[in-house]
Amino acid sequence: MLKTRQRLGKYRILGRIASGPLADVYRAQDTIQKIKVALKIPKADDDTGHAEFLHEVQVATKLCHPNILSVMNASYIDEKFVIAMELGQESLADRIERRISTTRALDLAGQALASMAHAHEHKIIHCDIKPENFILFPNNQLKLADFGFAKLSLRTLKASGSGTIDYISPEQAMGRPKFQSDVFSLGLVIYRLLSGRLPEWPFEWPLKGHEKLASRVRPELIEVLKKAIQIDPRQRYRDAVQMQAAFGKAQTHVRKQKRAKQKNPARAGTSWRQLQWREFQRHFKSALDTRHHCRGCEGPVSESMQCCPWCGFDKPSRGSESRMPSSCPRCERGVKNDWDYCAWCYGPGFVEESARTYPDKRYTAHCESERCRGPLMPFMRYCPWCRKKVRKAWKLKGSRHSCKSCHWGIAREFWNYCAWCREPVSREPIRRE
Image 1 (cartoon, rainbow, N blue to C red):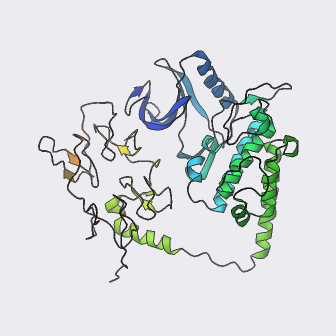
Image 2: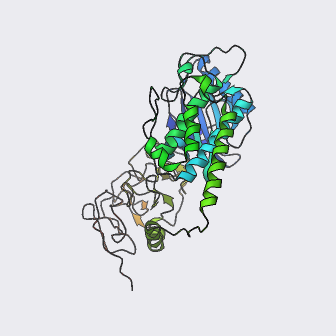
Image 3: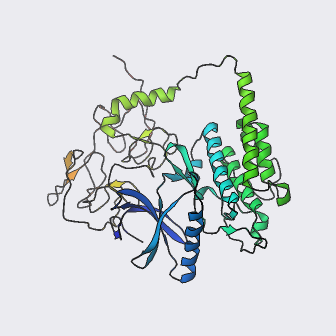
């Protein structure tokens, strides 16, 4: 496993994104082009393993579409086969675990269909459609990745039953993938995106989660999914191109019905929770640096928080873009290039880059160790220089309240939980002057 700040050719490792049975994926900085990229490095040392990833690069290079992840470079570096790709924010699998509006879910479903339709137009069967292989980028843009199992459609197609078992079609499991196989898998992905449940064998309607699905979308869209998830491939859509057309037609019909009913549309108001978050940000955004959003409730959080103060979600800002130049491979929080340890999770594994030190206006205290006395930022749990645990309780500027359990500063008027130890907070109404 590569370490944070380790150099690999022109790339400097910033942290690990994911680790699978076949490859590791890292976040890295291109020191020449000055951009951040994702590096995919196969674990297999044999030629067969490298051949599979070489095939992935060659297939992805044939496809040029805004909803397909592009390969920026592929080469051997220090005897490692390295694939450099665009760096996204998170996978669709991560996004599905959080609340998502129906409008946004339908938009993501439409983008997933567009990517798959483009591949099918070029006679390429993906063979491994699942939420983990869709990557989210800023502005809610979705891109399809991982063409390692992709097959070129020929008159006679012979292939193994490669794919992910939860989303694989019956015929693909028997080694006979078709365009309809991708349609089946994509139907399951969209069904889970809209209902929150993954259907299981024998896929008899109504499936699990059907009640929630019916409450969110019109019957026309449900019929599209029902046809896509048929056991018999002959009863499904011919390919993703045909499914995309049916999906678009159903959405057009729904929009026409909504316009007919909305003769006197009511003005959309702001929820009390958004007003609460806005008021909180006005008071404490500067002191806490709450520039991120919780992965559970989307409330404002900082990367130093151990849990969401609004819903109690663990590591609420994980995967968010940090202002720090690197990230800890253990907790994925931001770290500075001159730190020796992670200040948030006690994690080691940093490669010493240089003896240079970097000043920062965010340093407001010093380590209690007489041997160290290194500078500390607010709400650090450990000294990044000597690894000593911070014993003195941090106070929150602008608040006189502290957690009864850990004694760190809290915004008692707003929070439901202590952001540092998850202790429930007894709320008090906001006093207005």
